[in-house]
Length: 272
Image 1 (cartoon, rainbow, N blue to C red):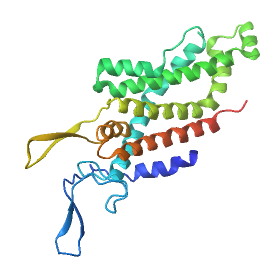
Image 2: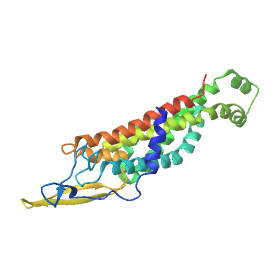
Image 3: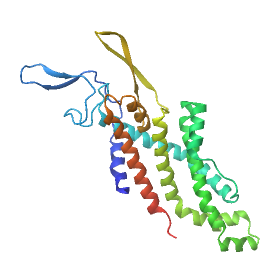
Image 4: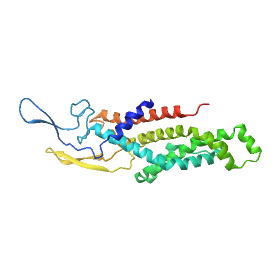
């Protein structure tokens, strides 16, 4: 599955830099009966010639939304990885010396903090999740190394903790760091999908009112702006009756990213 990473990264790099255009009315091809073009009211369903993956109720093309959402998800994931991996590594090394201490589950901590702190803390909470998961993975591997006979022999000879860290622990942990990073990054995409389904994100929304001559009360539609794939899941979940297939695309992209990174982690893990 790791071969999926390259096309997904290219899709994200080629994503539009501006918001997808709103099209309350979409101009279709001209009909043969007259010169006037055909006017279409969104949403368009999957398979339409003007939008192969369909549109949302505001006429935004799903291809544009997914490409921007993929780029945004990668940016968020890499930023929280950069913030949380080094503290997680330090915490994991500390926990390796104290195997009796255990960390709570990452998803439980994320849900509790997001509910308590709100959307403003969305990215710091994800960084904390990265820190906890990195610490858990490093602590498990570090505790296994500290139980090796050569470490016990060094302790019996009076080796200092700094000597054990530099000469024994770190050389055995370093080859497995790419696998740890790939595993943590894949977990971040799973968290984006889970939190997005619950409606948690850190980007603004645009409220659009629309009505017709038969209804004086306008209907309001909250459109996500610069949304990641998790926020798109939350948005399309509320438009299920109009375009049920639109919910599938961001879920499939997040699943593909997760499986590809897990395959990378499996192959990068040190043998034996």
